[in-house]
Length: 147
Length: 176
Image 1: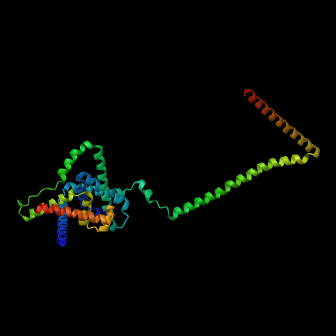
Image 2: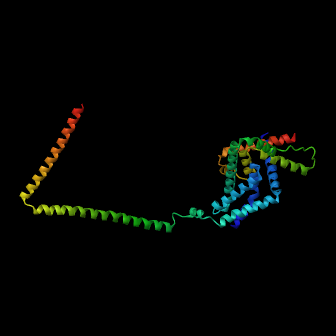
Image 3: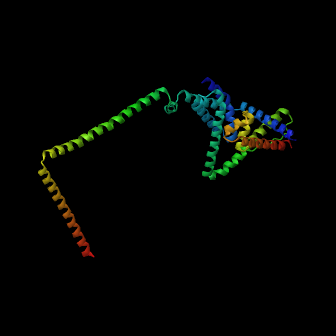
Protein backbone atom coordinates (compact mmCIF):
# COMPACT_ATOMS: atom_id res chain seq x y z
CA UNK A 1 0.00 0.00 0.00
CA UNK A 2 2.78 2.36 1.01
CA UNK A 3 4.70 1.52 -2.12
CA UNK A 4 1.64 2.23 -4.22
CA UNK A 5 1.25 5.67 -2.68
CA UNK A 6 4.95 6.30 -3.13
CA UNK A 7 4.78 5.33 -6.77
CA UNK A 8 1.70 7.49 -7.33
CA UNK A 9 3.41 10.44 -5.64
CA UNK A 10 6.52 9.99 -7.72
CA UNK A 11 4.49 9.76 -10.89
CA UNK A 12 2.50 12.84 -9.94
CA UNK A 13 5.65 14.79 -9.15
CA UNK A 14 7.14 13.79 -12.50
CA UNK A 15 3.98 14.79 -14.36
CA UNK A 16 3.90 18.13 -12.56
CA UNK A 17 7.55 18.77 -13.41
CA UNK A 18 6.79 17.97 -17.05
CA UNK A 19 3.87 20.38 -16.96
CA UNK A 20 6.08 23.07 -15.43
CA UNK A 21 8.72 22.54 -18.12
CA UNK A 22 6.05 22.75 -20.80
CA UNK A 23 4.67 25.96 -19.30
CA UNK A 24 8.10 27.57 -19.60
CA UNK A 25 8.24 26.77 -23.29
CA UNK A 26 4.82 28.32 -23.70
CA UNK A 27 5.84 31.65 -22.18
CA UNK A 28 4.87 34.58 -24.38
CA UNK A 29 7.59 36.36 -26.39
CA UNK A 30 6.75 39.54 -24.48
CA UNK A 31 7.70 37.90 -21.19
CA UNK A 32 10.91 36.54 -22.71
CA UNK A 33 11.84 40.01 -23.94
CA UNK A 34 11.15 41.57 -20.58
CA UNK A 35 13.17 38.90 -18.81
CA UNK A 36 16.04 39.55 -21.19
CA UNK A 37 15.80 43.27 -20.44
CA UNK A 38 15.82 42.53 -16.70
CA UNK A 39 18.96 40.43 -17.12
CA UNK A 40 20.68 43.18 -19.11
CA UNK A 41 19.77 45.72 -16.42
CA UNK A 42 21.19 43.51 -13.69
CA UNK A 43 24.43 42.94 -15.57
CA UNK A 44 24.71 46.66 -16.34
CA UNK A 45 24.54 47.37 -12.60
CA UNK A 46 27.58 45.15 -12.15
CA UNK A 47 29.50 46.90 -14.92
CA UNK A 48 28.85 50.34 -13.43
CA UNK A 49 28.98 49.92 -9.66
CA UNK A 50 27.76 52.84 -7.59
CA UNK A 51 30.18 54.87 -5.47
CA UNK A 52 28.57 53.62 -2.28
CA UNK A 53 29.20 50.02 -3.26
CA UNK A 54 32.95 50.67 -3.21
CA UNK A 55 32.71 51.20 0.52
CA UNK A 56 31.89 47.51 0.99
CA UNK A 57 34.93 46.57 -1.03
CA UNK A 58 37.23 48.59 1.26
CA UNK A 59 39.65 46.22 2.93
CA UNK A 60 40.46 47.07 6.51
CA UNK A 61 43.25 44.54 6.83
CA UNK A 62 45.19 45.33 3.68
CA UNK A 63 48.91 46.18 4.11
CA UNK A 64 48.31 49.78 3.02
CA UNK A 65 45.58 50.35 5.59
CA UNK A 66 47.56 48.68 8.33
CA UNK A 67 50.72 50.71 7.66
CA UNK A 68 48.72 53.96 7.52
CA UNK A 69 47.02 53.09 10.79
CA UNK A 70 50.34 52.26 12.42
CA UNK A 71 51.88 55.56 11.29
CA UNK A 72 48.89 57.49 12.60
CA UNK A 73 49.02 55.76 15.99
CA UNK A 74 52.77 56.49 16.30
CA UNK A 75 52.12 60.19 15.54
CA UNK A 76 49.36 60.27 18.13
CA UNK A 77 51.59 58.64 20.74
CA UNK A 78 54.38 61.14 20.10
CA UNK A 79 52.03 64.12 20.37
CA UNK A 80 50.37 62.63 23.45
CA UNK A 81 53.74 62.45 25.17
CA UNK A 82 54.91 65.87 24.01
CA UNK A 83 51.90 67.90 25.15
CA UNK A 84 51.95 66.90 28.86
CA UNK A 85 55.75 67.47 28.99
CA UNK A 86 55.33 71.09 27.90
CA UNK A 87 52.59 71.75 30.41
CA UNK A 88 54.66 70.14 33.19
CA UNK A 89 57.64 72.29 32.32
CA UNK A 90 55.61 75.48 32.19
CA UNK A 91 53.77 75.03 35.48
CA UNK A 92 56.79 74.59 37.76
CA UNK A 93 58.51 77.58 36.13
CA UNK A 94 55.61 79.79 36.98
CA UNK A 95 55.34 78.47 40.55
CA UNK A 96 59.07 78.48 41.13
CA UNK A 97 59.35 82.11 39.99
CA UNK A 98 56.82 83.13 42.68
CA UNK A 99 58.55 81.05 45.35
CA UNK A 100 61.92 82.36 44.33
CA UNK A 101 60.86 86.01 44.65
CA UNK A 102 59.36 85.28 48.11
CA UNK A 103 62.55 83.47 49.13
CA UNK A 104 64.74 86.37 47.98
CA UNK A 105 62.52 88.83 49.83
CA UNK A 106 62.63 86.83 53.07
CA UNK A 107 66.38 86.28 52.89
CA UNK A 108 67.00 90.01 52.73
CA UNK A 109 64.99 90.70 55.92
CA UNK A 110 66.45 90.70 59.48
CA UNK A 111 65.01 88.78 62.43
CA UNK A 112 63.48 91.95 63.90
CA UNK A 113 61.84 92.74 60.57
CA UNK A 114 60.46 89.23 60.44
CA UNK A 115 59.04 89.64 63.94
CA UNK A 116 57.37 92.85 62.88
CA UNK A 117 55.85 91.13 59.85
CA UNK A 118 54.58 88.31 62.05
CA UNK A 119 53.07 90.86 64.46
CA UNK A 120 51.37 92.64 61.60
CA UNK A 121 49.97 89.35 60.32
CA UNK A 122 48.74 88.47 63.84
CA UNK A 123 47.05 91.87 64.16
CA UNK A 124 45.43 91.44 60.79
CA UNK A 125 44.16 88.01 61.75
CA UNK A 126 42.84 89.32 65.10
CA UNK A 127 40.98 92.12 63.40
CA UNK A 128 39.37 89.66 61.07
CA UNK A 129 38.35 87.41 63.97
CA UNK A 130 36.80 90.33 65.83
CA UNK A 131 34.91 91.36 62.72
CA UNK A 132 33.49 87.90 62.25
CA UNK A 133 32.51 87.68 65.94
CA UNK A 134 30.82 91.08 65.73
CA UNK A 135 28.77 90.09 62.68
CA UNK A 136 27.69 86.82 64.34
CA UNK A 137 26.56 88.73 67.49
CA UNK A 138 24.43 91.16 65.49
CA UNK A 139 22.83 88.30 63.57
CA UNK A 140 22.04 86.41 66.80
CA UNK A 141 20.52 89.61 68.31
CA UNK A 142 18.38 89.97 65.23
CA UNK A 143 17.07 86.45 65.62
CA UNK A 144 16.30 87.03 69.36
CA UNK A 145 14.36 90.17 68.52
CA UNK A 146 12.35 88.33 65.93
CA UNK A 147 11.63 85.52 68.38
CA UNK B 1 30.63 38.13 -16.54
CA UNK B 2 29.89 35.79 -19.42
CA UNK B 3 29.32 32.90 -17.02
CA UNK B 4 26.91 35.00 -14.99
CA UNK B 5 24.99 35.96 -18.13
CA UNK B 6 24.68 32.30 -19.11
CA UNK B 7 23.59 31.34 -15.60
CA UNK B 8 20.92 34.05 -15.47
CA UNK B 9 19.70 33.19 -18.96
CA UNK B 10 19.36 29.57 -17.91
CA UNK B 11 17.44 30.25 -14.71
CA UNK B 12 15.37 33.36 -15.54
CA UNK B 13 12.34 31.61 -17.00
CA UNK B 14 12.09 29.05 -14.20
CA UNK B 15 12.49 31.84 -11.66
CA UNK B 16 9.71 33.78 -13.34
CA UNK B 17 7.44 30.73 -13.24
CA UNK B 18 8.20 30.11 -9.56
CA UNK B 19 7.37 33.73 -8.75
CA UNK B 20 4.25 33.61 -10.89
CA UNK B 21 2.99 30.48 -9.13
CA UNK B 22 3.42 32.25 -5.80
CA UNK B 23 2.11 35.71 -6.69
CA UNK B 24 -0.41 35.03 -9.49
CA UNK B 25 0.74 38.33 -10.96
CA UNK B 26 2.87 38.67 -14.08
CA UNK B 27 4.19 42.20 -13.48
CA UNK B 28 5.10 41.56 -9.85
CA UNK B 29 6.81 38.30 -10.83
CA UNK B 30 8.95 40.16 -13.36
CA UNK B 31 9.88 42.72 -10.71
CA UNK B 32 10.79 39.98 -8.26
CA UNK B 33 12.99 38.22 -10.81
CA UNK B 34 14.73 41.47 -11.77
CA UNK B 35 15.37 42.40 -8.11
CA UNK B 36 16.73 38.91 -7.49
CA UNK B 37 19.07 39.18 -10.47
CA UNK B 38 20.34 42.60 -9.39
CA UNK B 39 20.99 41.42 -5.86
CA UNK B 40 22.85 38.33 -7.04
CA UNK B 41 24.94 40.35 -9.47
CA UNK B 42 25.82 43.13 -7.02
CA UNK B 43 26.39 41.07 -3.90
CA UNK B 44 27.38 37.56 -4.87
CA UNK B 45 28.86 37.67 -8.37
CA UNK B 46 32.34 37.20 -6.89
CA UNK B 47 31.31 33.83 -5.43
CA UNK B 48 31.96 30.48 -7.09
CA UNK B 49 29.52 29.73 -9.97
CA UNK B 50 28.44 26.55 -8.17
CA UNK B 51 27.10 28.69 -5.32
CA UNK B 52 25.02 30.92 -7.59
CA UNK B 53 22.01 28.64 -7.93
CA UNK B 54 21.25 28.15 -4.21
CA UNK B 55 21.99 31.82 -3.57
CA UNK B 56 19.71 32.92 -6.41
CA UNK B 57 16.91 30.67 -5.20
CA UNK B 58 17.33 31.89 -1.62
CA UNK B 59 17.09 35.53 -2.73
CA UNK B 60 14.08 34.67 -4.88
CA UNK B 61 12.34 32.92 -1.97
CA UNK B 62 13.01 35.89 0.32
CA UNK B 63 11.61 38.27 -2.28
CA UNK B 64 8.50 36.13 -2.71
CA UNK B 65 7.90 35.95 1.04
CA UNK B 66 8.52 39.71 1.32
CA UNK B 67 5.95 40.27 -1.42
CA UNK B 68 3.41 38.17 0.47
CA UNK B 69 4.09 40.04 3.73
CA UNK B 70 3.63 43.33 1.91
CA UNK B 71 0.39 42.10 0.38
CA UNK B 72 -0.92 41.03 3.79
CA UNK B 73 -0.21 44.50 5.18
CA UNK B 74 -1.77 46.18 2.16
CA UNK B 75 -4.86 43.99 2.52
CA UNK B 76 -5.16 44.98 6.15
CA UNK B 77 -4.76 48.67 5.36
CA UNK B 78 -7.15 48.65 2.41
CA UNK B 79 -9.59 46.12 3.82
CA UNK B 80 -12.51 47.43 1.72
CA UNK B 81 -10.69 46.30 -1.43
CA UNK B 82 -10.03 42.87 0.03
CA UNK B 83 -13.34 41.28 -0.91
CA UNK B 84 -13.07 42.12 -4.58
CA UNK B 85 -9.46 40.99 -4.74
CA UNK B 86 -10.22 37.75 -2.92
CA UNK B 87 -12.90 36.95 -5.48
CA UNK B 88 -10.45 37.69 -8.29
CA UNK B 89 -7.80 35.51 -6.66
CA UNK B 90 -10.25 32.67 -6.29
CA UNK B 91 -11.13 32.89 -9.95
CA UNK B 92 -7.44 32.99 -10.90
CA UNK B 93 -6.20 30.23 -8.62
CA UNK B 94 -9.12 27.84 -8.78
CA UNK B 95 -8.02 24.55 -10.32
CA UNK B 96 -9.78 24.13 -13.59
CA UNK B 97 -12.12 21.19 -13.67
CA UNK B 98 -11.10 19.18 -16.67
CA UNK B 99 -13.62 16.96 -18.33
CA UNK B 100 -11.50 14.06 -19.52
CA UNK B 101 -14.43 12.10 -20.90
CA UNK B 102 -14.93 14.59 -23.72
CA UNK B 103 -11.23 14.50 -24.75
CA UNK B 104 -10.20 10.93 -25.42
CA UNK B 105 -6.98 11.68 -27.28
CA UNK B 106 -3.86 11.06 -25.24
CA UNK B 107 -2.10 14.31 -26.17
CA UNK B 108 -5.07 16.37 -25.13
CA UNK B 109 -5.34 14.33 -21.95
CA UNK B 110 -1.69 14.99 -21.10
CA UNK B 111 -2.04 18.70 -21.75
CA UNK B 112 -5.17 18.97 -19.67
CA UNK B 113 -3.68 16.88 -16.89
CA UNK B 114 -0.65 19.13 -16.92
CA UNK B 115 -2.81 22.23 -16.71
CA UNK B 116 -4.80 20.71 -13.92
CA UNK B 117 -1.66 19.78 -12.00
CA UNK B 118 -0.27 23.29 -12.47
CA UNK B 119 -3.50 24.75 -11.17
CA UNK B 120 -3.25 22.40 -8.18
CA UNK B 121 0.33 23.52 -7.50
CA UNK B 122 -0.79 27.15 -7.79
CA UNK B 123 -3.54 26.60 -5.24
CA UNK B 124 -1.20 25.06 -2.65
CA UNK B 125 -0.28 27.06 0.46
CA UNK B 126 2.84 29.15 -0.20
CA UNK B 127 5.35 27.12 1.83
CA UNK B 128 4.11 23.78 0.51
CA UNK B 129 4.15 25.13 -3.02
CA UNK B 130 7.68 26.53 -2.78
CA UNK B 131 8.93 23.39 -1.08
CA UNK B 132 7.43 21.21 -3.80
CA UNK B 133 8.83 23.36 -6.60
CA UNK B 134 12.31 23.51 -5.09
CA UNK B 135 12.45 19.80 -4.36
CA UNK B 136 10.81 18.41 -7.49
CA UNK B 137 11.54 20.98 -10.16
CA UNK B 138 14.82 22.52 -9.07
CA UNK B 139 16.03 19.18 -7.77
CA UNK B 140 17.35 20.50 -4.47
CA UNK B 141 18.01 18.11 -1.62
CA UNK B 142 16.14 18.35 1.70
CA UNK B 143 19.13 20.10 3.26
CA UNK B 144 19.46 22.60 0.41
CA UNK B 145 15.72 23.30 0.39
CA UNK B 146 15.80 23.90 4.14
CA UNK B 147 18.66 26.35 3.70
CA UNK B 148 16.95 28.18 0.84
CA UNK B 149 13.62 28.41 2.69
CA UNK B 150 15.13 29.25 6.08
CA UNK B 151 13.35 26.36 7.79
CA UNK B 152 14.56 23.12 9.35
CA UNK B 153 14.78 19.84 7.46
CA UNK B 154 11.78 18.29 9.21
CA UNK B 155 9.61 21.21 8.09
CA UNK B 156 10.73 20.61 4.53
CA UNK B 157 9.72 16.95 4.77
CA UNK B 158 6.33 17.90 6.24
CA UNK B 159 5.62 20.60 3.64
CA UNK B 160 6.65 18.31 0.79
CA UNK B 161 4.56 15.34 1.94
CA UNK B 162 1.52 17.58 2.50
CA UNK B 163 1.93 19.09 -0.95
CA UNK B 164 2.09 15.62 -2.50
CA UNK B 165 -0.93 14.50 -0.52
CA UNK B 166 -2.98 17.44 -1.81
CA UNK B 167 -1.85 16.79 -5.37
CA UNK B 168 -2.80 13.13 -4.98
CA UNK B 169 -6.25 14.03 -3.69
CA UNK B 170 -6.80 16.39 -6.60
CA UNK B 171 -5.62 13.73 -9.01
CA UNK B 172 -8.00 11.17 -7.51
CA UNK B 173 -10.87 13.65 -7.86
CA UNK B 174 -9.92 14.09 -11.48
CA UNK B 175 -9.84 10.36 -12.14
CA UNK B 176 -13.32 9.89 -10.63
